[in-house]
Each structure stands twice: as structure tokens, then as C-alpha cells.
Length: 315
Image 1 (cartoon, rainbow, N blue to C red):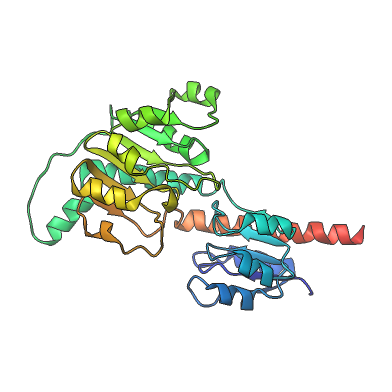
Image 2 (cartoon, rainbow, N blue to C red; image 1 turned 60 degrees about the vertical axis):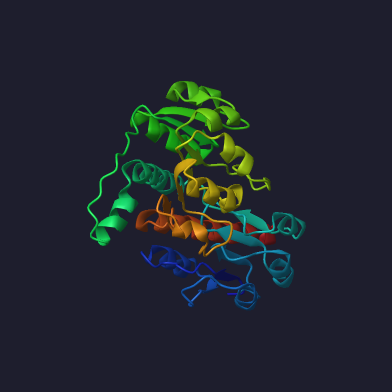
């Protein structure tokens, strides 16, 4: 019972008890996050100080935290993104990083498509006006026949592209290392980022790289976008200049935007004051089905790591 797994994830086994049952059946000693909220750095350090494996959410694992967790050998991230982990420090300390990238693909893609329809049909706007008992009609638009630009053709970007094609959109994709055979098969036209900015009616961000520090869409990029275009970001908040976006939406240079991720979270900035935006609180993967699958996979990753360690110790 020496081995300790610490679950710092705040929503663990909330929808289904199967991930918890897997932990119990593994025979490993474990601790849960019972606070029902995201842990602070000091709480992570205190709770996981004896942990060999952490099953993590999006709480911070920076140099300060990792330096304090002397026994930590693996972070099993429940989700795809690992921006909250200082990968260089983890590598230097020999800490293995595992995640669950495949499970998040469909829920993020579905939210992206939902947001695009919301912008085109003005669903959020109409809900707000109807609550004020205002009967107002403004023309919407069809997705079929629209030019949609997908920035980033990883798992999620490819899934979004495939769904868009089935819905009749004309899809353009940009990626530094595009899968040309996939693009040809799915009739997605590989073009430059600049082409997408200038020509597309809708642009959706799905860049996955952890190394990019500059904005993917900043003031300069927004200025060359088509007047009235829509912008969607379900990728990472740091890729989009929210101040430049606000200015473009306020001036009606852009027709609307939909965001699930932000530079600082929780977000309570000026975009909340606009009526041509759709805003969700980073919930793309928060579906009952995907959440359970992610947690199960994260637990299995943790258990498998410990089993491999036990085998190495015996040999």
C-alpha cells in the first residue's frame, strides 16, 4: 500500500462511479479532491505531497509545484491539454506525462458546430431579447455554401472539417504539417492562413501546439478578416487577442464571435457586455459521456504506469 495516487481533478466520478471503482479495484491507496473546486497551488502541494501519480485536471503544475512534489513520477491528465504543466521541469525530473486526447475530439467538435449555428441563427441573441419580451427579427444565414476556415487540422480540426463538409459548407484548412491524403479524401482545401483570414466567412481555431506564444489571431489578423465574418475559439484562450476582438465586434467589423476558452479564467471581461457574442465557461468536454470516458482512461493510464514501475522494480 505504499503507492499513492492523488486525484486533484475537481469533478472526479461526478457523473459515473466507474472511474472510482477502477481505483478501488486497483488496490492502490488514493486520495480524492473533496473540495468540489479547482485546487490552488498550495492545496495541490499539500494534498499530493506523497503521491507517485497524480490524476490531474487543469490546476497548475508549474516549477514551484513540481519542485515540492518529490515523489511524483507521473501526471495522468484527464483531458487533452497539458498547458497547465511545466513540461521542461517535468522532463528534467523524469515525470511522465499522460493524457486522454482521443476522448475530447467529438465533444469539442460538436460544441464548435453548435456555436457556428448559434452565430448564424442568432440563437443566443434571440433568447436574450425574448427574455426582455422584445419581439424582434433579424435575418440569419445558412451554413450550407459558406466558406469556413479551420486553423489547425489535428484530431479536433479534422473532425470539425468532416462535420462541416457533411453540412454543406466549403471548408478550407490550414496546418503547418497537413495530412494531404486526408484532405483530398474529405475535399478540404489546404490553403495559407492568410487566405483563410481574407476569404472565409467563418474561422474556427483548433491549433494544438503548446509552444506557440504569439496570438494566432491578433489585431493585425482581425483587420484583414472579411467584414461581418464570425470567429470561433474552442482551442486555447492565449491564441486570441480578446481586446482586438472586442474592438472588432464593437465596431461591427466582425459579425460575431463564440468563445469557450479565455486568456484568464474565470473570464469576466468586456466581451460579456456585447450582444453579438456566444460565451461558454470552458465546458467543451463537459458532457456526461466524454467526462466519464476521460476519467476512466486517466485512471487506467495511472494504474498502467504503476504496474510498469512494479515490473521494473522486480526485474
